[in-house]
Image (cartoon, rainbow, N blue to C red; front, side):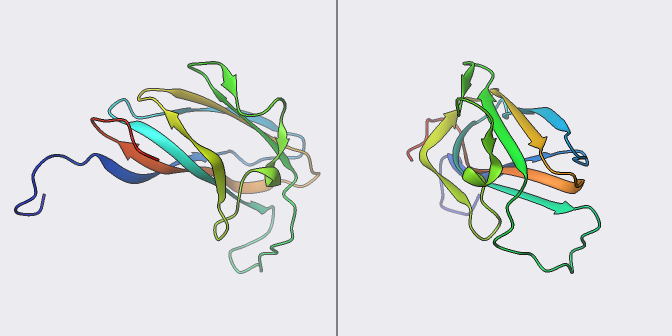
Length: 145
């Protein structure tokens, strides 16, 4: 800690990333995500990243490309879902340069468990799929939005 500064770190920018296996045609992948037991997490935004099979980092990215997935997210502790059914991914997951900002931040309590389900609706395999929950960790207190 810098000299002359007292107290502890209460807030820290943080990204929880969920890495999915190769998403083959029609695959449903349900993965858990565990929030750190030492801090709450204020979720503010979300991004998704993945490449169609055969694409490389040098393949130009198309901003108007619709990603053929549905997504559902459930707070396992409360049983609350964030949608009434699986939602098309582009309706709520941004891309790196345009994050989807949640209309209301959501507070995950320390040690919460999240269930994320991604379904590939296309006939193409997608590699290196990542869903990133963007926000901040809060230590010793509940955060202010």
